[in-house]
Amino acid sequence: MTDELAGYTVAVTAARRADELGSLLASRGARVLHGPALRILPLADDVELRRVTRSCLDAPPDVVVATTGIGFRGWVEAADGWGIGAELLDALRPAQLLARGPKARGAVHAAGLPDPWSPPSESSAELLAHLLEQDLAGVRVAVQLHGQPLPDFVDALRFAGAEVVEVPVYRWTAPADLGPLEDLLRSVCALEVDAVTFTSAPAAASLLALAAERRCRDDLLAALRGPVLVACVGPVAHAPLADHGVPAVIPQRFRLGALVGSLCDALPGGAPTLPVAGRQLQVRGHAAVVDGEVRPLSPQGRTLLGVLAERPGRVVARPELAEALRRAGGSADEHAVEQAVARLRAALGAPELVQTVIKRGYRLPLEPVGDDPRCARP
Image 1 (cartoon, helix red, strand yellow):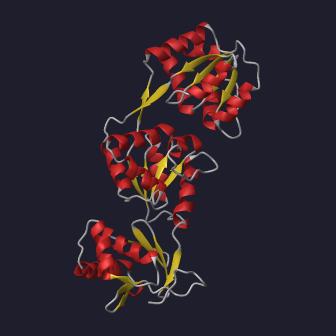
Image 2 (tube, one colour):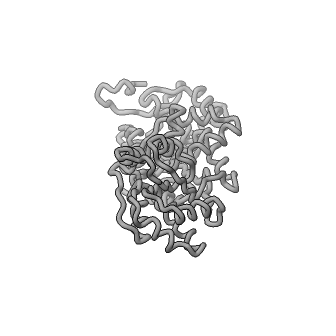
Image 3 (tube, one colour):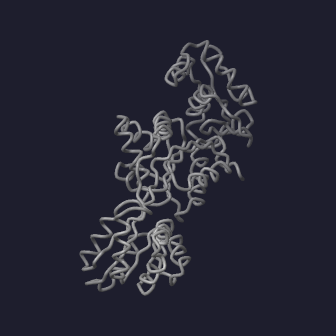
């Protein structure tokens, strides 16, 4: 299938490779809401990076740790811009080279350096463990940072006796325009999205910080712990959210394609398909799937169908449906319910899916499904 995410709205917080991730989600049918939670500031002209690079030329490192592909490439490109790129590579070539994952490994190899060692898990923890197996007393280790300091990693090396040179190739900062991120935050708190994706820890921390500034962090956390699914590209990206008790879907391979694949499994998997009036009905974020066909719904229609689907087969009284519409910001009288039901039936393309029970309300005429307690007669 290519429409596994049809009917769902997925929020993207990434800055780098956001277009790629958004395209992958859209190709699976998702509606994509993009609000970059940060931006990358390249430090090609940064005085500190230039100073650190010069120190690596004056005293070449014994060990070089590349943590990201974009970061290592940026370092080499910055050195090229200063006219010392060849000198930097000559200084790094004799060192023990390590790369956190295949992208960093590819960047090292593309620079013409020997193929580095890389941990199978692609984790900083395994890379650190590999280093700590060695005698690091007096060993000079250059660690290319990836947008933020790595205090635990660096402190462990220093505690083992290493001389650590931190290479700040780029850093994260707040987006220049907060508007899209504020829109994303409001949509998550209002439960207008079905999932939020995070590809870095700074993006997660940035969204939490903005929510705190806007005094809606409790609403954000309630949404992320409940109806809004969180998907993180890896455990590092999940860490700031895990600290707040937010669960997440994390793919086995820390890649964008795998991240999208995990959403394709998790979102539809959490929405059961119900046998209703001789048809197969699945309720999704802003749509319903009727016999395999995606039927877009209005906000009112989605509200009504959601309430009915919570208790399929049981009658839901008109006042209760009116209250649900009111909470969603719509009209709140029984006449409004009748009009909304009529529009819902038209949108579903199968009026029989929403049955009127005279003088009582409405129900989804669920067909018996074994001993499922949700199945009930009116």
